[in-house]
Length: 136
Image 1 (cartoon, rainbow, N blue to C red):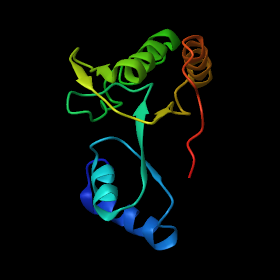
Image 2: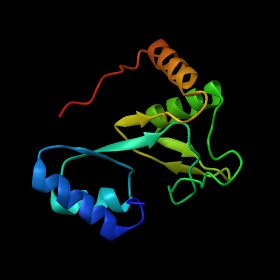
Image 3: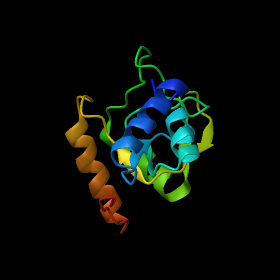
């Protein structure tokens, strides 16, 4: 909800700033949470979603649509490679949009999450792409 609701995004950012203003939060690029964090000076880390389809405006496709959650490990790994290497993702309706991110999210409730992570890791390592935790 903080992706599109500026008031909610502001409340989240203000809460973090009041407790630990040096703590980065994970944000979806161009979301309200991203824009408010940037505006208020809260550190953030841009997050990309490996297992979710994007709309052309970079919002996530509703889980109500079939195919919004991607469970095929090979398809997910290909998407991640394209995001990391080319800075692009193919949207739900086939358009290619530019993306930027510093971390990749696989949702724990995706039925094949562990397989997705395993294949993504193998593919990135096979291309000598370093996998590292972000630091705070």
